[in-house]
Image 1 (cartoon, rainbow, N blue to C red):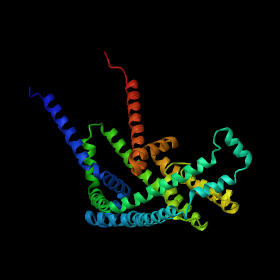
Image 2 (cartoon, rainbow, N blue to C red):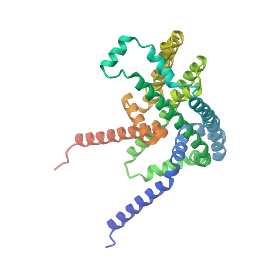
Image 3 (cartoon, rainbow, N blue to C red):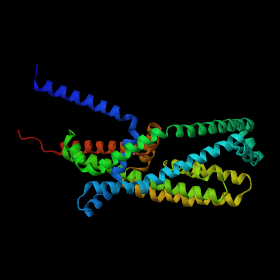
Image 4 (cartoon, rainbow, N blue to C red):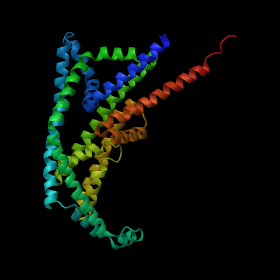
Length: 358
């Protein structure tokens, strides 16, 4: 009964159970763990350079790299987030008080539509203007309520955020310091051929590094350009609209246009032709150029994935995992393609192998 096969089967079952249990324990801090790992992968090259300059003192090099990560990434992001929460609350109050009325903006756009276009909309059953305005008003009311609710929730979850933030920094320090040894342990533990393990882990780190650098660079550039443009044109809540453009820019090609496009249409409707043409120029030739140049260079080139795969995996990842999905989605897609490439190449090698001698 106590055969080697039974012992190995029992051990593998125990290994699976404790692995799932450990993942279950870490799940409440999934975001902190994921971003700690992602930042460690991103800043490991800097850590290695500092390690050489500091004579191999790992603790000092890890602390210095951690401080650099905080100055370059974490502190600016927290500052922008706090400013964004304040602006969202102010904008929500103006929407509820009626100082900002999306329904009136929509009414101005409708009033500028020619009669022949309204007749054409009637033929397709889209001419119920009053109903559309009512829906826009209701949507704006629900949106302002949701914004206010989320702003309050952010304030209430400050303690939880601080815990997750502390865990991320703590984990980042040890991943920087002990990342090389941990990587060797994982490579030795995975029940795969060594070349396959090496290839998949390298693909994992490459995709995370390229996705974060590429998407964050594109999002920051598009959000900054869009926010500054809105501010120069006198639009309220320019920081919020810039942040929304940055977030939507995670969707290649069309993301930021979902914000500046309707605003350009509104400017055309109210006769502000110069502003409309200026915004269209900036949106198409500046924001669009950033997307078309930076994203393929920083994301597609390193991940070696087609644009449509990047788009679908990003959208699917965000739908399933929230904001963390813009990293998780492309990583899963890249590992999927890499695993199938290895499988296809191994089958091809087996087919081309000489037959055994009889």
